[in-house]
Image 1 (tube, one colour):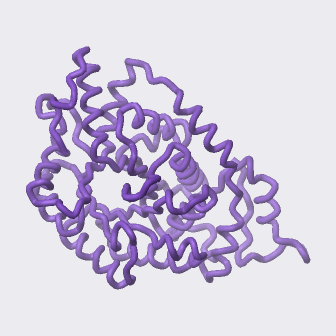
Image 2 (cartoon, one colour):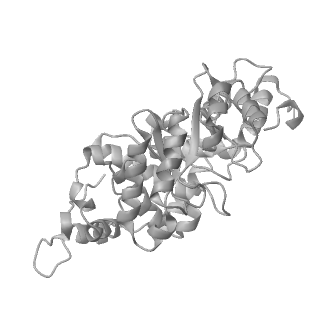
Image 3 (spheres, helix red, strand yellow):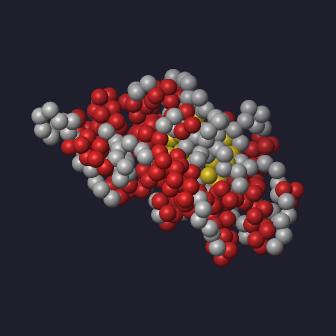
Length: 352
């Protein structure tokens, strides 16, 4: 990996130049992926000192080769998984699912049923692993906690005026504190896409940092970019850096509430970011693609992306998650088929 020098505050290395960082960024834009980092051990703390320094830093990142990115994602998607490894991969994917219900019609009964399914996805087969978490709205956190008590399944709660994020910071922080006080193990926040697209990067940074502080020491923070609304891969790269600079424990593609959610290409780009982040800082950050991943075949393709891009250290539910609801059913059906040689069909798994 090529490590690019960083010039705090945009200082130039020679009169009339744009600085060493800018020259290297232009030269190696198609060859390297830049590293990312968090405030706790940031090697470039000065880049968040002001709006101008943060903007200069983010816009100095190498541009994304869209054609190359999509070609690599497509090529990795053609990799096959041998039968001997498929059973392991299916179980691994199940263990990475954040089983999700985020509807206005959610009831305590529905959340309890979802919690029971998360703990024992296949009641007829005790060898099936539990899912990673149940993801609900803040008011349903106590119900979910009771449903998964003693199981090791985490309770995640969306917050910060999910999914639009159109609220004051005070309201967003109250949302987070309510979820954490109710027992949420993880908080999934949405960034202010309007502020990000308007170039108000410091505002977005400060909101993420404030939410991280509100999470305290007990709840991990997933930062949702809503990649379908960011429009360009360059923006996704900048958002990844911004989220990590502000202290994200996970970076997450989407809310699942817009037309374009997780794709192999945008997930690959984010995996490259966390890989290089750890290479520079020693700090590991997770990735969560969410929305649009519905089949076991798709899930296994994403696992190949993880293994070939970030590496085996991310093949664990602590570092990689699927934000999904219907995906679990197909994973269970494929698991049953592999074990029995017969395809049982959707009537043999519980309905979410």
